[in-house]
Image (cartoon, rainbow, N blue to C red):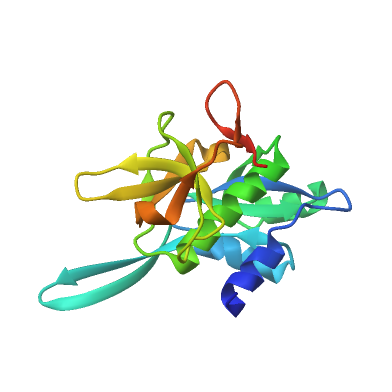
Length: 192
């Protein structure tokens, strides 16, 4: 496993000592500043990003943009949360009832983001088969399959934001995940 991915996955652990993971809504275009604030406070946090390449007037412009505009994920206790909220970059926090599901979804998205290509925001879907990627750079990731005209994508859900991301993949790299336990809304609860 590469060093960057290992570092990210080490921060995505359950909170302890009264700490929990929260979804924080940021002020407009302040996601990176909010993530810097969490880092300065020594708190575990996650800001999934994507690369965007634009051409303007014959020049290439590369940008790093938040995958979920307006949101950052952080692990803190109530005092740290209050301090973070007073920092000027955050406007609201959302409590996460299922901490393990959030961490599992963040891990999937981080693996796909650091190993995959073309991760983009995708509307959350209710239909499709649950699959497990068994080979290739996304091995170990669980998600749903979405068919496109030119190929297939795996859709990785972010339930706390009622959103999802999608990554292109080869169907030969996946198998149906019959052992996935799904709730009444069709969301992944646990895997065997």
